[in-house]
Length: 87
Image 1 (tube, one colour):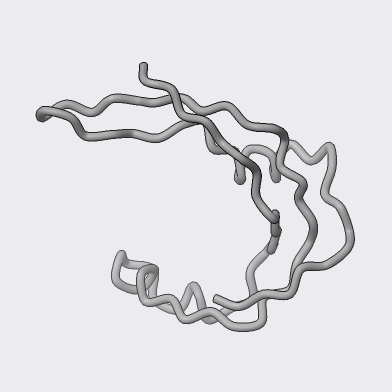
Image 2 (cartoon, rainbow, N blue to C red):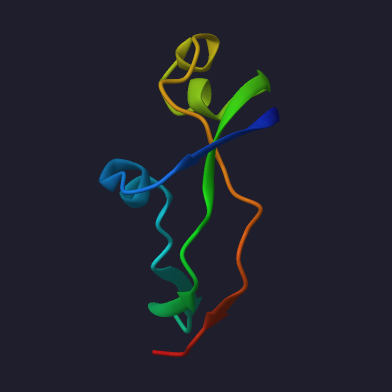
């Protein structure tokens, strides 16, 4: 995937917040799955332009042709520092 970050900030957008939120990670331990929550500052999201996408995963999971059309939304963040805590 290649994209070009834009300059328009995405703020107060509940759908963007929900779709990009990372509340934690699931970790397999001793035949069980544990959830490790995380803590981080709010993402700084900006709009972006998709330049290239080579995605065979969608077709392999039963969604052929889905990655061939333009996406409904492309967002970008430079990232944030994240801390994970054991449950």
